[in-house]
Length: 518
Ligand code: F6P
Image (cartoon, rainbow, N blue to C red):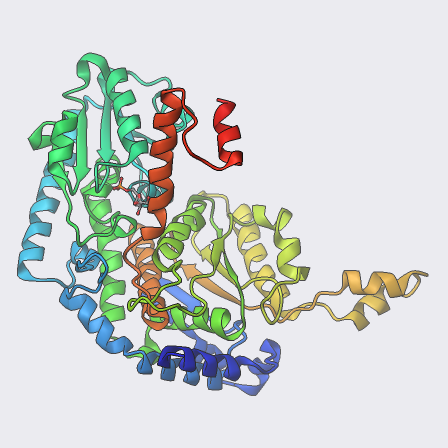
């Protein structure tokens, strides 16, 4: 057993008692002020978690013993905290925080290059459409932000995305567009990703005579982009110290800057910067990303939950859970420590969909389903936007009412005695009552944004980025590599080559049979 295992076992023992969330409100008169935190337009209410002061103290103690403050200092200083790839991790430098003078100089140059290009495209007016080509971190962040910003800003161009290698993806992206009026932005940190290369080639073919002029690239591998045929002056750089899933703040967000303008993009970065400074400077017990991470560690390692739902009650944030799946699961879905030892429990499964839609799908399970977690169901992060951006006050009030009601219902539940009283006339009451009973005491956090502004969105995404870092420190995993995605890529290339040559290669019987059907 490592020291870390002992610390986490102690935490589990600490959580191994019945905690009643409702009772905590009575027992802790200052609960709301203790468990609510705000940074700018983002407010987080952790008071409906099955966590009391004693549990929180244990978590803060755990964080201190895992040297969280030292790790945080190393991160912002630009030390090579991505140990397995021997890289610094400085997406915060893209927002103007941390790193060296050299990093900041590079960022300033990139931002000037982006702004000049985006402004020129917007002023020129030749391009009416952007097709953004990329996958994973080169897609999910830009796509989330593209949707979300529509609330508070206007897109001046049509923005489409092609990510999947499925031909439907590229076909949908170019459908109805005129190549003469379309700018293709090929985004790939490595410029070696199969899906992006193939989509890039198909769009280049579709652009025809405009191919060389109407295509630009964003990459950390200039040579490959040039070999692909992109002119050197049309290549926007980013660096190995920006992880793909942390890259929307870099030139990876160029399509957003073109579509929404430099001011909107700058506000988005400033929102994240405010969260960076909060995370860097606030003491652990008053630190929002730290609190968010500690609550998740409590739910995972203390209460034994294997999944975490994220439900934005905001149509324009409907990609948020998909974005977080990569951010959290690619970062912390690991079972080996930095030292190569086995970890304990790490990242839960992240899942979700927009509210209210989810209420009519999987909320049945959230309210009454069993799970390996101590109180059943799964912890939920609710995300709501207070301002109505749609000029539909009645809709907005109903949306918020549903959001607030769900967290209340998860916590309150409904006692069997009440069900029995309500259904006393039923002859089958003994069978019915347990089916209509809600156990309650199911934990949730509610995040509210004052409005869905670029600034607020920047706060929200940076909050989760830093949460992931803190979790990684506590679980002792490197949150910035992703070795687990490599094996499938290698095998896909082998199978593709073999199928192309009409061979079945050396595979298991199931795979051979599948290949034989194509
Ligand atoms: O396969 C996973 C991954 O490497 C992600 O980490 C990354 O965001 C995505 O592929 C796309 O990579 P690239 O930007 O290099 O095309």
